[in-house]
Image (cartoon, rainbow, N blue to C red; front, side, top):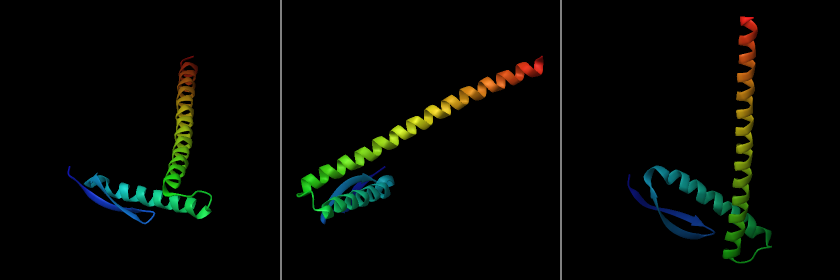
Length: 99
């Protein structure tokens, strides 16, 4: 797998980022998402300076990621509980049919 430079633009600044060929679309999507998030923060006028805007965007994105991970973990726990209950139901039905 080869890696080549992909050009991205964030807040009007251009960057070249080395990226494997098969991950270029994901990188471009992530760059667009970050750029949009940073522009929204910048538009609010409450945060001044690209560094501070980048930090706030990183915090917002990290917060979203952590919420998503917690939701996914909760879904996994529910799925595990349902599987356990299904096993117990199947066992009870087997016992009932054998009696």
